[in-house]
Length: 412
Image (cartoon, rainbow, N blue to C red; front, side, top):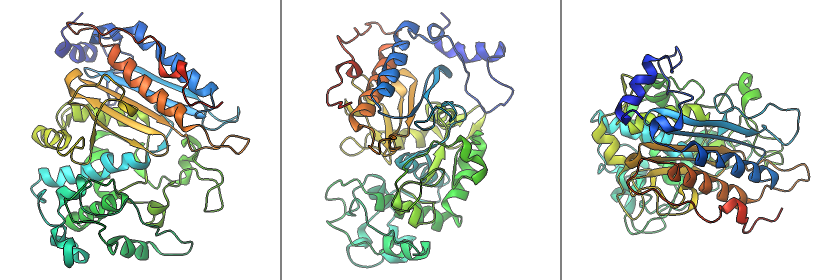
């Protein structure tokens, strides 16, 4: 086996990367990057178990290590019918839900911080007039990133016919529920306010800023807010019986983001697993991807490092269990999305795991997929990725049973 630092170079010289310079190396043999193909093969079984249990109509999985993709597969189809296209991790676009918070909003803050246009301990009042009164004057950028600003989890701003400008005013007027920096409460409202800060500092709308400064430079061509109707054939649908009176496909599921016009700090981004693999590789490479620098390595280290409890700046860290599984290192960070999406990046093992599903898509019976199914499948896939790392001095034993085989809490 080649030493890990030489693997990417070797594959590049052998033509392993497509002509597009913005790519990670595909179809990399697992043993060439110190991973077990036999253990990775169990992912097929786990994904099939989830499909058979009606946990999701479609699933995309990508695992990368040392600059190469060792696992890149789609399972199922875009919806429950047999006539729709099969999931393709390079083509199928998913509503990322709260992955928007890190892939778009936190990334935008990282760029502005890296360019010295914003400081983490700047008061939000420096940029937003609505925060210049009362306790809101104490709220900082760092507090928003750490979900410690005192804001509630959410606010109902959706009403048919209400303008996005009114929804924005309501978000900005949301009162604090506790003193800033007193406690952590995961807040969509805080993420939206952070998106407004990005727009105030940059002078651009959030979607325009991240396209110009992150997605386009990285070649992430399938990552965007408000995808055009022409792309809907590639987009996995979410709810059929939505509160908006029509099925949602290519239209953000989150009602707050929809009320804000489809572009919001908390949700609204659509992407493919393949595009997210590029983003993850950029993070592992310290803010640079194939000669394109998005931010400096010190900025990546700062934002991805555990800062308060088990949170980093914008990102979550792996506390053992849930979607990151049991075996990721203390340095691992990631995030999940309500629609069934997750990304985990483990710098210690130079590894990333991306799982995208549309778990909100109702079955033909009208029932929603079982939440426990995807939760177990995601955790199993993360565990199998880490258990497949074969270059440790002490190799971990496989568990007696995978969660997908135990099926605890699975009804169907």
